[in-house]
Image 1 (tube, rainbow, N blue to C red):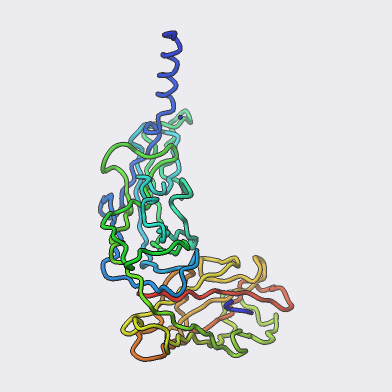
Image 2 (cartoon, rainbow, N blue to C red):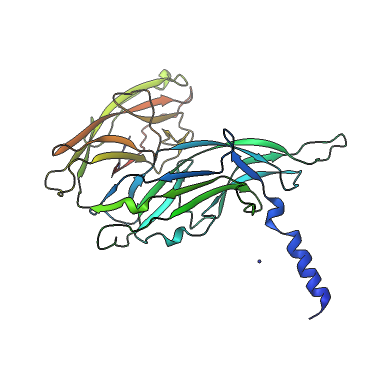
Length: 346
């Protein structure tokens, strides 16, 4: 396995009727945080975020927030007794394109990075469901449901140059998404949960470009060796192999000192639960990553973990790759899978 790498009066009447029939507000849910009924979360960059000028290639991850999990309660406040799904409606104010063009600010949802300016909405499951009457029809209101979403904010480079002074001058807050119904955005204020990102003015571009290397039992490759298929027991960790990530900062810029480096793992292979890397969807086994000091606490893809604090020329952290059985009849033969590592600043 490879780890890294929208005249006549009748016409006017018809137009008005048509608009009334398709008004999005008539199909909108009210969705609030289940725990406290709140409708707003601000995810701030509340301290200076340092970004290396060394690699500003389009798509490079510059920063990720912590991961948040919120449960929402959705209710039928607009007379839609059939029930409807809840959606994350991205960039509801249509303002995120105003962010400096050197940055892409988006949301990591279900392990996938989503640019809110390029996609309209994502279905996250039933917000309300039909409440059956004695005659089998759906009677109003539809029954409320709760639904949970896990998300984080990311910042990536776009390939465009940063400001000449290295500072993003932006004190605005941007609505990343709104939880709402299938017909669109509820036009009633304070009715639906929104997540905002703020503090982009805390971004500073600095000169620091650590050289990142991976060391495992076969150079940069983790090799699990030959493993008998007869050992397969569903859920069992068959083998753990150590590897390390090293950041060498020798002569790599004057602004590295006293920075905390973060590692983010990602993969182009299929995953299970955003943690298990699958060489094939039906391979019968998968690979999990963990820190060496927490060998059974699995790392999620696209979720930052601390690599180390720069107080010298080298930062190094140890990890484990674990093979887990998912079936008692795994496929046999050679296999490969890979994971990428992005190193950013805290």
